[in-house]
Length: 193
Image (cartoon, rainbow, N blue to C red; front, side, top):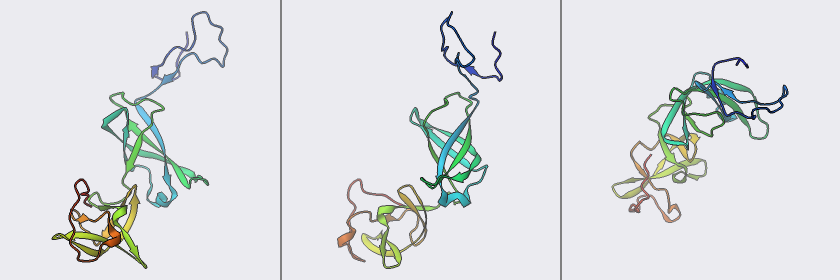
């Protein structure tokens, strides 16, 4: 009889009846899956905003309609010199026993920013000299509007000032566009901050 060092779920048997075993032979696996530890990298540029206890949301391709929530448990003590990222470990409650060790997950988290922050697609933001601006569509015309930008999040950037939530931005055709010029929306191209 073999006694497990902790309570958990036994996996598949790795040996057959009558097989010769040694101390290094793997007989089966034993996993405590009540809490899943999720490791992921974060860029060093956000290191100042990372702290234990921050909430995360994770998604898995295995369950596309489900979101799994957890909290940052530990932040690594070193930045990887090649990727310039730090390893973060979060813990996710696994009450429904859907998550398995080794699964790939997509992680999102808010780093001390307001939930109602205005996000604009990167392709809408233009630069001239030392200023950033977007074309906001107002009454069917493109209005050149200076913006102050915050942190980038994937293919979007936080707009601190200049554009408001719900305003339509021009995301293509900037080369020939001028301030005050009439514009029309192309089907399927409507994205709002």
